[in-house]
Length: 496
Ligand code: BES
Ligand code: MN
Ligand code: ZN
Image (cartoon, rainbow, N blue to C red; front, side):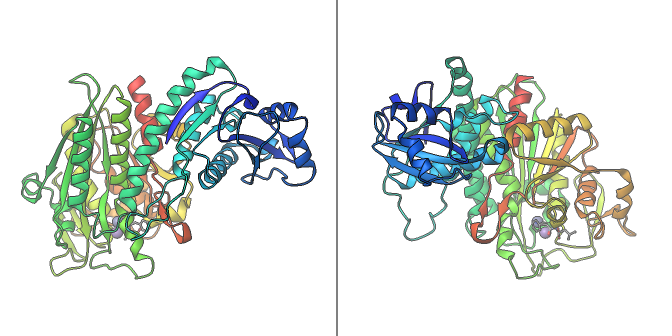
């Protein structure tokens, strides 16, 4: 989708459709009043007759509104003015885009971006509008034999700002919004692909493709090289599968040659059956999403490369399958990680930490300014936080705060969880340096505690995205989170 920014009167727009907000109950927004005035009360008449109340997310499409230069006016319900916040804004934009896409307007001018949203700037409104618009038209139907075609899809959106002096910041917001949305689209596509297509080898090819398009160096390490590095923990998970594991390393060089990079690490389990500690059958298909950490890292790399951010970023993606097999890990097996620490595998389904710990040790060689890992790590995190916030764990409170700010700016929320030493004792093993599980209590915290034993040499944060990376049920699909938050974090670091 193409976006542009404009400032001007709604009644003067030569467009297929002008999109106007209506508050509950039947109260026109400023742009609506301007049209109503030239149209001699045409809109307020319609509202008075009861065609629309203004409930958030409702729409009413009008044709041939008198004294306007546009073909259509789309009224969009905003809900109560006092309650108009982030969610209501996003819902209104989404409803508008869906209707536009289905009703034949190839292009439109949207005035919803002029509405004030509590505590949010014009930059936020425009960036969100671009992201929500692209999300509203996102489809994943390439594996259906017949795609349901949109007859006249929306191609171009003009987003309106109230004042001319807002145009340049709004244009910058469109650029970041579009880059973030494209990164999210990549993360969604990879997440939605089934395990038989999106294999470790496929992810490696995708990384290479991004490298080619944007000029990043991409290394893909195969089993012999991973063995040479001593990644006994990662390899122990991979060996129960016929798909060869890959360690993907991407280098984005937007900063000074020697400037320390931010390292992003993404869990890339392309299917998690649990291994010998086999998962129950119900909803097991959703474990194709167990590579969403990796997908979000790839999406973020794409977004920052597109924006040409001025900093260095290294992406590390350990990727393999976790399946039951004659050669798979068995409960009680003890493996040696790249760090030299030994791990007793009491549950083969706690495999994410087993592949991440070696990737986190590998990260040391880049002498990073910070390391952030992203993983669909624990069901316990879903129990703790549900589907609204990702879990944030960090060995550095300043880094945690920085990530929370980025999450707030991006409206891709995080909740800071404890990483106190008190929890560490749950990982005690009688036979190895540690066990890979810590019992039922605080499962997402003990998983993070496990990782913390491999991240002592740098500032590190861990994002548990088990509850936020995809949706279940009738709207099953990847969300593209946390690409927005990671991208915002890197934008801030680049400008620091
Ligand atoms: N990939 C899963 C975590 C997961 C489960 C994410 C359900 C989203 C929904 C992870 O590998 C896993 O299986 N974790 C176990 C850990 C347990 C064995 C300590 C879990 O959460 O049950
Ligand atoms: Mn698992
Ligand atoms: Zn997993």
